[in-house]
Structures are given as structure tokens and as C-alpha cells.
Image 1 (spheres, one colour):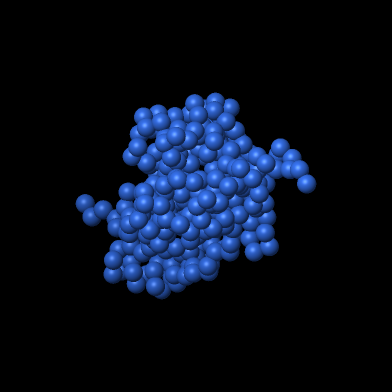
Image 2 (cartoon, rainbow, N blue to C red; image 1 turned 90 degrees about the vertical axis):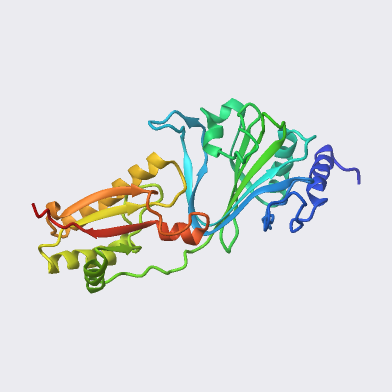
Amino acid sequence: MVRSIASIVSFVVLSVFAALPVWAQAAGDVKGAADHSLVPRYKGAEIRHHNVEQFSDYAVVTGPTKRGNGPLPVPEATLPVEGKITHLIYRAPADRSSLEVFRNYEEALKSAGFETIYSCARTDCGFQFNRVMNPAINDGLLYDKEQRYLAAKLARPQGDVYVALYVTTNEASKRAFAKVDVVELKPMEQRMVVVKADEMEQALTRDGKVAIYGILFDFDKADIKAESKPQIDQLAELLKKNPKLAVLIVGHTDGQGAFDYNLSLSQRRAQAIAAALTASGIAANRLTPAGAGMVAPVASNRTEDGRAKNRRVEIVERVPATR
């Protein structure tokens, strides 16, 4: 049977990937890096960044970017997802263009069963789209004139998978880079522990503060999730049991994202907790919401476990002035 032109092109494209097994580690890879099992690397590419988050949230960009109120542009549309996230940045061989690398990935994802949900190229991606993707890795800045982006989804019974692929060219080195983020949707491990009112009272007496992790929010929002009610109820019980107690409600974030944005988000979340307590009958003048953002970590932000510890709310005893 004579092959069609399309099948010949597909064979050539896929052979570029097949030449290097997905589990192989190239000499130029960063230590401990590995390809994702669902997304093979481009032949001869090197992994310049690799990080895995066992469970976190991610906003898949599904529309062009526009000017925002803050320093960074904002996408017109995103798809918030949660699960295991693998972050990879590859540096392509010196003699390969960003278009060639992108087309190979595009075809490989299609052949693996992924469906494209959004794609854009160059300036059609919107205002300063490259700043949203932000894949610079000590090789100089990456510019938007050669950029291409693709968001794709693989539906499967054990959990859907999303891939956000961004490919562009480094202006200084003229090398193509591919940023590949893979999100595997899966249920979160139930590790939330509700801190009881008596335990919080003991911690405040001993340390003047207590960290709690049982208040959850919608992704990138200050809306308290329904499953946070047991912890909110325990906070209200603590304050009702100690009518003279006044507290600071301090929101903390991990070290990812923009400083000013995290500061604002943590403030709004602290205010939401104060509002929920006020609705439970606690006088507003006993509650002082404050956002600390990323300024007071209790663990390293280099690991997901560390970042999870940093995403917290602290209840701090507010001692009245003595003068």
C-alpha cells in the first residue's frame, strides 16, 4: 500500500522523538531530571529544569493575554486544574528552530491521544505572553517573536491529563527552548487535620500563635471551601470560650508567583476568614486580618512539602497595649 503524504510526515516527525527513549537521561540534563512518561523529549534536547509537585493547583492558559491591573499581563481565559504537576524545560539542539520543535511536540501529543484545547503563535498569543510563561533559565531572556503555545487534554479513566507546551527561541543563544507542564488530575490525599479549640488555646498560651492548615480556598481566589467549616467552627469556639481574646488572622502563601499578588491574595483570604467568624457571632473588633504573602516561610520553597507548609493561616494573640 502506498503511504499518504500525511502518514509519511507523521512517521518522520515521530521518528525524531522515538530516537531517544523517554527514560533516557542526556549528558546535559540537570541532576535527577527525567522525562514524563506521556511526553517524550525532542531528539538531542537537554533538560534544564525539572520539578514535580505531588499535588498542587495550576491554571492552564486557554486564551490570549492582555494588560492587567498589576505588573504582569493576565490571560483572558484559564482552566484551573489540580493534581500531580511535572514541570520541565528543555533546551533543543543548536541547529533546530522553535517551529520544528513545536511541530514535533504537536504531532507527538496528537498521536498519543491528546486533544488540543487552545493554541497560539507569536503576537497572536497576546500582550507579553512570554512573561506569563516565564521560562527563562539563566540562559538569557526569551522573547515572543518565535513563541508558540499549545494546551492539550488527554481523557482517560484513571484521571485526565493536561499538557501546557510553550516553545520559543532564546535571543542571545539562538537556541530553542520548550517548557512542558504536565498535570495529572487525581484526588488529593486527605491529610487535613482540624486543630481543636483547646489545642489552639494551649498553643496561644505557650507560643502566642498557632498555625492551621484546615482552611482551604478555591484556586487563585479568596472563597473559602465548604470543607473548611470544621476548622472555622473550632476557631469560633475558641473565641467564644475566651471572650477577651483578640487575634490577628494572618494569611501566608508559598514562594511561587509575584510578591505583590501573593501579598494581596493572602490579605483577602485573611479577610474572608474574619468575615466567616463574624458571621458565627464573633465581634469584628476582636479580629484583625493581615496578609503576609511569602515573607515568613517556615520551610524551604524548593519542594512541594515545603511549599505546603508555607501555605497556612496563623492565629496570633493580639495583646492590648499597657500604656
